[in-house]
Length: 471
Image 1 (cartoon, rainbow, N blue to C red):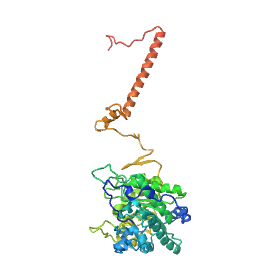
Image 2 (cartoon, helix red, strand yellow):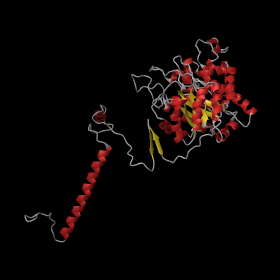
Image 3 (cartoon, rainbow, N blue to C red):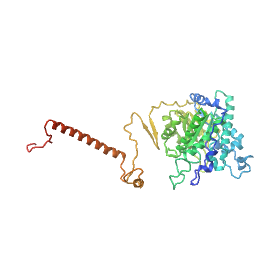
Image 4 (cartoon, helix red, strand yellow):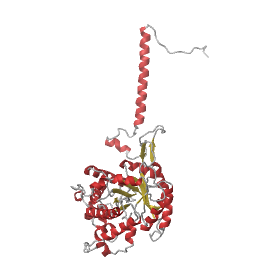
């Protein structure tokens, strides 16, 4: 489902205020959610289906849009014919200017065997739409995209009620990163804050739910902190509206290093987001099925929830096109299903309805992955996972201060804020010295008490003095 994302800008002048002020966001839940009754049972219905078969996700919306060879005027439609800003490439806008085309793409994927279709909202936040100066359209774009997908899914469910179709409301990564500087010359710089991301994700989530989605899909996560902002916003929305939708989370392993762009391994990534209690966790985009398999295997081994995969159709060629055929992709993903590591599978960049048809055909022969029993433990993560369980030895939690190497240490004495000496003594050092003083005091007290006892008997205590005859 992934579409082209604008690269983060490196200009320090860029801020979210360029896109929208906080007052512009639609953050208050509507009085009525038209699809609430259907949404209340979404998790139970999806879980029931996944108990017996591998569910199919759709393929790449952007890839299908490219087959239409749209021009600038096609993107504009009648409504935006006179605006000054170029909008070609703004695929999310097509839900307003070419809604029948978007619905036809949903239909094609449903005919191919998709159980879950994704809304055309990969860039449906004010941050991303600011690239086209259309951030004011975000609420309408998300609600309309959800309604189009909802209508398509319900039409197919009515034809085959025994095989219900579901709508995943897509929440993309935005065009900015919360934990990585866009400026190589200023590693500390950020062009977005956590709170600003939360505002963007909250608005998108509210509008997707109002439009009728069954699932919230946080996908193509390259920066885990962005994902945490999305989780915080989404769960906050659930608290406010009084009901919850299942959450699917799909990260992106960016290259052969086996890490996300922000540096985490697959297990560390899962440890970072498992508090969201997602319906499923998986990976999509960047890699083809062959390169993605070991990371899906890792998730399958450690995740106490369902596992998803929607890889690219291989890697792009020198023209940015994907050459891997539907049969080749299906053969690779059949290996996933045969190994028992899949619950949900679909396609990302370069995949078409034919890819989905071939994948659905081969995975239908295999049972879904069984969620393993994972022993409770303290599971933490930085760039690497860190697990504390019954087999762990002593774990020391803390951090070191390089007294001689840091130029800031001497300034603490001048500011009288943290240290009274430029020879910064660690807490552990102070504890050791305090303990020595305590032990010395105890020994001194014992000796003093012993001397008092001797004096009461009229004796005088002397130390042993070796004599000349001692060997």
